[in-house]
Amino acid sequence: QRYAQHIGNLYGPASNNEDGFIAATTPWEFGTCNGKLREIITVLPNRKYKFRLINGGLHHALRISIDSFPMTVVAADSEPVEPYKVDEVVLHVGERFDVEIIVYNDIAESERFWIRADTLESQSQGFQNGVRAILRVSSV
Image (cartoon, rainbow, N blue to C red; front, side, top):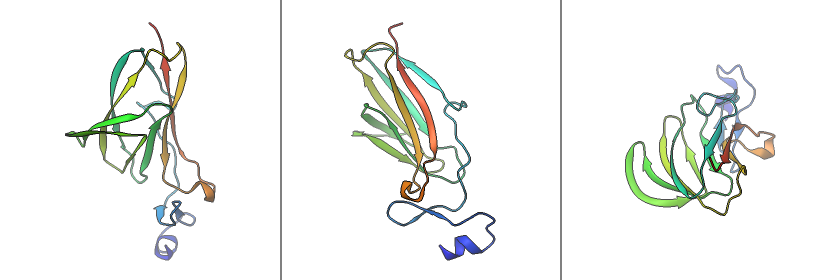
């Protein structure tokens, strides 16, 4: 950590994750979902959707989740994997994951859920960086 802070770095101290390991040596600027700062993705009930999650950033790993929706990972870096369920997935720079979600009939129309992509920086250090998008359920 001393090296990251003092040798050729114009930024402040490195940020750590909750376990004390360095999560980033440069500050988070911003991120997008489908090229937008606040994308709204509309889905229909009683359907399965596949999302390709990509971390196209330069430095930060991202923890991606969709509120109230478990995800099934079906591919990693475009290679099929034995499907497994997760609540969140961590994507390091350049990684891709294909995940599937099921939108059931018991979700009310126009209900909205956060899609979260947070950096791994420690929130106890005051960091709460990431990208937000909205998953909106529609009947049309």
